[in-house]
Image (spheres, helix red, strand yellow):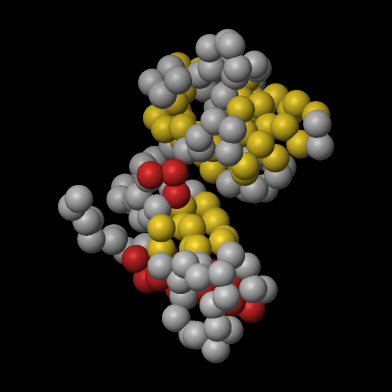
Length: 156
């Protein structure tokens, strides 16, 4: 597998890994996972009883088979962010087509997804008209407040 050289965000990701490693040891956790934009980092202890004195963070393991650090490209567009913490769903039920796909043209106010929070299904609408460039979250994954969900190229 070819490794890509991290872009400008490399030092930021390295610092994030260090902080998560320290938090992993401090809270005596077996695993921790964080997603920030298009970067997803998961740290996992290999041994059940890791010594708290070990200053080095646990190995970085790709989450769900994806890259730990994605190539970052500056893209002009509108980012639709999660307005709450919850579970991201692309469709209203498992047997139905997703609300939108990458490449779809959407209208302002059109439903893009659902975030389930405390057993309530919250419809998330587009705040701009345009084309869906990228869907940034996998179906069924948890999202945090302010986490980017979609990147929309505004209509001209």
